[in-house]
Image 1 (cartoon, rainbow, N blue to C red):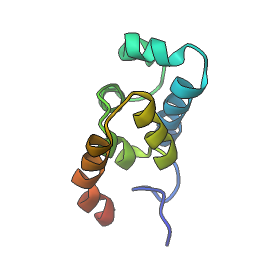
Image 2 (image 1 turned 180 degrees about the vertical axis):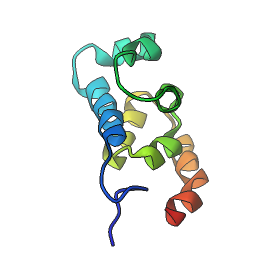
Image 3 (image 1 turned 180 degrees about the horizontal axis):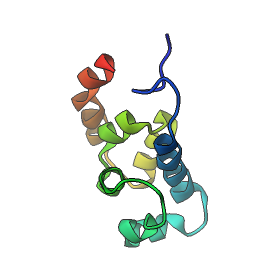
Amino acid sequence: MIRNWQQDMPSVQAYWINRILYDVHHKQGHLQQYRDDADAYMKDIPLPAEIKSLIRDNEVGKMYLAGANPYLLRAHCLGVKIPEHAFLASLRAVAGEARRG
């Protein structure tokens, strides 16, 4: 069975995570707003505070496990200039958890 990350089907949470990642990098001015104050940028997004903190703190592996689309996640890392080694290390850190899902 092919799974969507940890979930059998995308959740509402995954939708909002991916919506943020998409908007930040595809809508004019959103990246700067996110960089200026990520918490303020996400204040009206219906996600729990712990998920917003994963996004704000660029916890790549944990965002992946929470439902982030891998293509949007990779584009986000490039857009906010997360180094390749850090991107890969974060994914590797949760690899065992992802396999168990």
